[in-house]
Length: 469
Image (cartoon, rainbow, N blue to C red; front, side, top):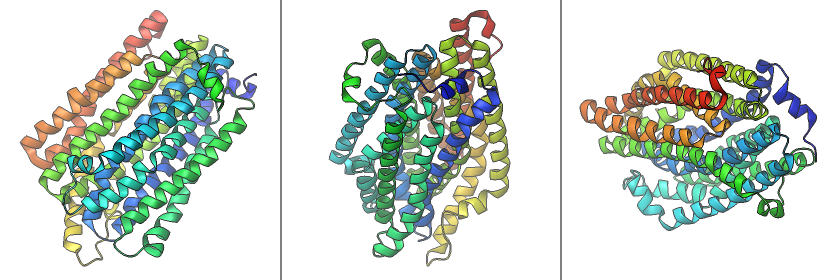
C-alpha cells in the first residue's frame, strides 16, 4: 500500500506557511469548536445563576480533562511515530502502529472508567467538592467520565492519528461536529427534557452523546482514509507491531500523557486551594480556566498542525524545512497570545459575566463570583505567551521522538515550578497570589523548555541547527 502522494507532497515540498496553514487551520477550528462545547455546559449552567452548580463542574472538569492525557498516550505517541515512519517510507509499519494505537486507547479508556467508577465519591471530595456541590459533581462525573471516557478517548486518539496521516480536515470535521451537536443538545436536555434542578445532569448527558456521535464519525472517516493512508483498524495489524515501534510509541506517548496528567494535577491543586477560600473563589477560578483556554486552543491547534510536518522532515533529513516550520509556528503562536492578552485585559468583566447570570434571586452571590473571575482573568492571561512556548517546544521534542526531555520538561514545569508557586503565593497573597502563580510557573517552565529543545536539536542534527532555538 502506498501513501497518498498529495499528503506526502504537503509534508515534503509545499511552502512552509501554506503547509502549516493547511494542517493547522482545520485543527484550530476543531480546537475552538471543542472549546465551545466544553464551555457550553458552563455557559448554560451559568444561566441558572447557581454558583454551586458552576463550582461542581469545575471540580469534575479535571476528571474529564484526564481523557486528553489518556488520548495523548497513543494518539500523540502513535501519531508522531507514524509521521516519522512515513518520512522514512516505512508505510507498512506505520499502518501497524496506527492499529496498535487504536486498541491501546480503547484499553486505557476502559481501565480509567472502571477506576473512577469504583472511587468516584472519595475522588470528588479530594478534588474539593463540598456538601453543597457533591450531588451535582457526582452526577456529572458519573455520566461524562465513567460512562463517557471510552468514546471521548477514542475520538481524540482517532483525531490525532488522522491528523498525522495528513487528514487534518477529516479529523477536525469529526471533532467540530461533536461540538456543534453538544451546543444543540445542551439546552434541550437541561431546560426541556429534564426537570428544573437537573441542569448539571442534562449537560452531562448532552456532552456524552455528542462524544459518541463524533467517535462514530471519526471511525468511519478513519476506515475510509485507511484505503490510501497508513491507517488500520485490524487487530491482527496491532498484534504484529514491532517491539521497537511499541517502545517508540510509549517513548513519546508517555511524556505526552504525563504532561497532560501533570497539567490536570496542577488544576487539582488549584481547585483544592481555591475551595479552601470559599466556593465562590472556586467558581470564579473555574470561569477563568474556561476563558483562558481560548488562546490555548488556538495555540495547541498550531502546534498539532506543526507536529507531523516537523516529524516527517526530521525523519527524511530535510532539517532546513523542519527549522522553518518550527520558526513559523512560533511566530504565529506568540501573535495569538499577544492579541488575547489585550482582549482579556480590556473585557475581563464582560467575558466573565457570560458564564454566570445575575438575573436570578441570588444575584449578589453571582456578582461576587464574577468579580473574582474578572480579577483572576486579568492576572492569569499574562501567562499566555509563555504557556505557548511551553506547548510549542514540547510538541517539537515529541515530533523528533525525544521523550526523555519531554518528560523532564513536564515534571519540572508542573512539580518544580507551578505547583510550588501556587502554595507559596497563595500563602503570601491569598487568592490573588494563587492566580499569579500561573505567570511565574509557566515563565520558568518556558525558559527550561527552550533550553531543552536547543540541546535536543543540537545533539540530533549537529551545528547546523544552532540557529533554531
